[in-house]
Amino acid sequence: MELSEVQALQTQVLWAAFVVSMAFGAVAQRTNFCTMGAISDIFNMGSWIRMRMWGMAVGVAMIGFHAMGWLGWIDTSQTIYSSARVLWLSAVVGGAMFGFGMVLASGCGSKTLVRIGEGNLKSLVVFFVMGFGAYSAMRGMAGLARSRTLDQVSFDLPGGNAVPAWLPALIGTDPATTGLMLGLVVGGGLVAWALWDAEFRSSANSLLAGLGIGGVIAAMWWVIGHMGFVAEHPETLEPTYLGTAGGRMQALSFTSPMARTLDWFMSFDANTTLSLGVVSVAGVVLGALAWSLYERSFQWEGFRGTQDTALHLVGALFMGIGGVTAGGCTVGQGLSGMSTLSVTSMIAVGGIMLGAVLGLRLQMWLIMRE
Image (cartoon, rainbow, N blue to C red; front, side, top):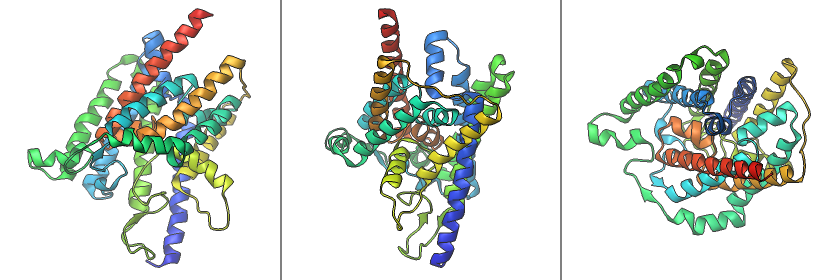
């Protein structure tokens, strides 16, 4: 493939990723899909409806990802989640920081972008602070501290991080077949668990959230893993996945992409190229904006006072640093990572939920004190 053909294909891949990201923003805005909200509903009201949305979305994405691997459309062993090294302490601590921060900041990274599209100026501030924190954890002082402490604690899994990569040696099947079997069992189980509830089944919004968000994640795996795959890049002579920052297959995530978006705006020059992270951030905001304008729910909103401002600033910083430390957010590790059956993603999600519960307890204490 000639360089000009690769460049043209990369443009097509980024446009496709932008459209898929807009669909994510529109569906999330329409259905009020929110991981933090799902945990909060359980903690405060005992309602599992939004958690069932989240579970169904993971299940649909998981089935789609492993079905595409079994069909040969994508190579499931080449994702950013397939490393043999499991940074379990980083996943736990970073996840807890992220979960704690998303409660203080009124939502995770994806919800922040959706709320910007709805006219929430608080979320715009959260975006800038979260992006700053993420950049610090990637290339600054927080990143140096992370690499010298938390990242030093790890263990390796033979064959890779994802369960279908090392399980075949135990049961005697090939990775693609094992992945499909696990995807159908685990992913299908999550979908069945969501549909088991009659109230969930009767809600069009709930079904749209589960099927729509899960379908969007699977679609992004296809865009990057199939459409964007080049077996031999003319410049490096190595296989690569176009549109990604590191050349490896990935789907949606929003913590590091926020940092990359800020960097793209601040350091733009003639040689600057777009990446999946930047277009996905823009796509989610514009998708949410388009739907909020369509249903006439767009409304400007600002901070209520000093405490509200302080909590959002602290929460945003925790999310930025924690999300990078954990290797992803509620979408990056929670939806995209869990769809690959990554062990690190499972650990990170556990950390996020733990941090969210701690954040909700702090909120309850502040309310009781007032």
